[in-house]
Image 1 (cartoon, rainbow, N blue to C red):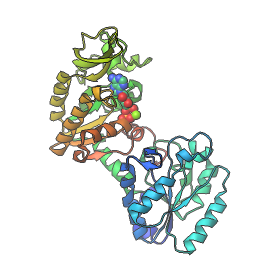
Image 2: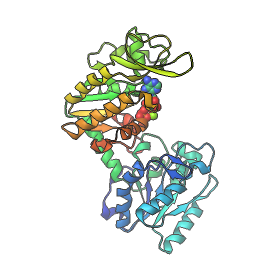
Image 3: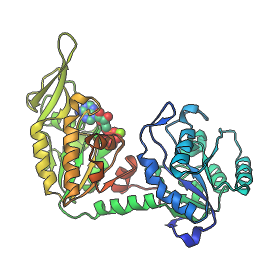
Length: 391
Ligand code: ADP
Ligand code: MG
């Protein structure tokens, strides 16, 4: 069923199956980053305040075959119990578990006053990876109504966002709504719109560049995807990362005045003792043994000028290999520029797994107008792709 607006008159006192995105980095049972969990709280608290019984549902990582402790959501249950200051009942299962039994367990516990449950990783079931009617029906059988608040997987044809809604009253959670509201401001932007794109592969960013090309005043390109453009322009890119089979998009935009390419780069190369040396070079000076790992200082300054012109700015994809502190400067500086400008007159949106990590490195995330919880989902939504979890 179509997602309706969350309305307390329609959900009061009901049992709700709430699809969240708790796919956060966890090491040895410790949650390293809780941004997505915190963003989910508003809907959870709203449901609890309206006397709902809440069954939380999420995926975590990509388990291969059924239950795998490494991918269990148990640490999330403990974490949520702490921040909500109430006991979350954790419901473990593997792919052989039967939903009738899970439902019985929920019934028994809810009779004893338990209000909030967390199902283990839904990807322990094979059916989650497609639109499996059987799994969707089983999930739906657990509750009276369904709420989707997992924007980050709403571009996927997954049972827990798609099949589950068949014949079930379904609602959009507050986070999902907020994502759509903010991304709508990119689709109908205050102009000038400036797009800042980086990251590893041009192929994954091509659809959004195509879709937003006409609306954008400038498209600033950094990251490894720029290597394709530099090579096509006849520059030597040495041993830099290169995305084979993306000639078409590069050819389309190579001579566009809107596309702004780096004028200098930071390269890394190993000296005779194997030590990594870094050097700032103009794009015409890159030699055979160089790896282009970041944009250079003149490019940072050039990009900043364009960012300052924007009334709407969207950023996806790091400007360089920022995980290595030798090559993080370009990304962190551009993050700061965008955040500062978003704090001022522009509307600024950032999305992408690594991009958000890099934004956090800059320490300026709170200045952004919107930090999306979805990387692929944001790109797909802005590119006008189908969203099986929404439409
Ligand atoms: P996001 O997940 O934010 O959408 P991507 O997955 O597209 O971002 O790309 C992120 C990765 O791109 C980072 O891990 C970063 O190290 C890598 N990257 C960016 N520029 C370069 C470069 N010049 N050379 C090698 N890797 C790069
Ligand atoms: Mg990524």
